[in-house]
Image 1 (cartoon, helix red, strand yellow):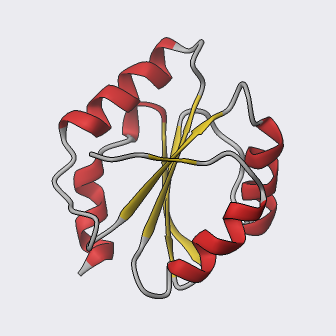
Image 2 (tube, one colour; image 1 turned 45 degrees about the vertical axis):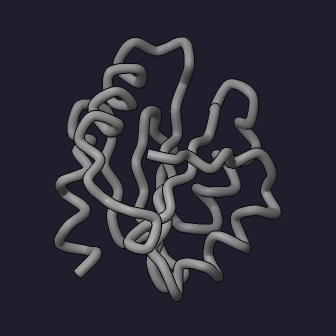
Length: 111
């Protein structure tokens, strides 16, 4: 799995635009939270997608809380941590949080 680092608000417009061609994943991670660490590990262990199917982005919430706030506003989702969002056709079509995060849930949205 090759995470792309989400480090600027400007990237969100590029992600939204790219999602019309290839779905985009946003994983919001708190590096101080054990639940977030477990969700990240589970996501990486169970990742069965290639870059042509979906592009994964990783957001370090502690360093970039402003980006998380912008995600909530731009994609009309409530902020959670950890949180996995699937962006497709410019919109968030799937969101899961905490222990419910499982990449196998994405299959139904990628086909």
